Length: 313
Image (cartoon, rainbow, N blue to C red; front, side, top):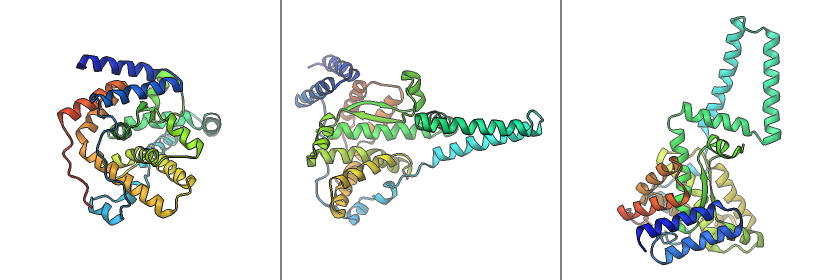
């Protein structure tokens, strides 16, 4: 198959992913798996860290401090929210001293604002506030947009490498609102995970599916920790993984073993594919389709094969 043929197949993939329904998702997954079997894609073929129980000492030997990124704190957006609130109050104060409004009008404005915020929380779970804060964050913080792009590219890349097909992604609330008029949708990646959801619903989750889910869930926080020294986003991902392990009735020791392996595996993958990760994040910021993102991954893998050493154990 020529490069042009592969490009055409990836366009077919985008058409399938744009369709709704489990059948289109299944066909998309089969298409990518078939291309991988033919040796045309690296999907699901990446060598991973051997699966076993790793100690905290072994993680530290690999310069990993899991406690630092398993409890992300979003200081950027909370700071932006505080800044907006402070600016609102400062504006009212300035207007009062400029005699543009009187005290009664200020009280009315505050009451109306509080009512609108409450209505937003009740009606659409704070969608308008989230849209405003996310958009403002990109304007006042120069690294916020890149942090989000790298975070979501981390999810996308790790999923592709371990064999879970990405279905789509969103990098900003404003972008999605302009395209679909949906509110209260944060940045995130969507995956062709119908088979995984069916396993969860049946109560018979295979170890392979759990391993894949754990790695993809931790990819975002691991990305931020590696690139910025600490994680801000991804708390929901960590909490969902914790809830899944609890639902599976894992003992604490068994849950710790799963998380530690996933942490080591994900960090190793991201360290050894840093150039691919950067190129993918840039493509996602340009709005590339899933098929185009896969083409970027494959091109970068061919140009820059992973060079990182195996984890130390």
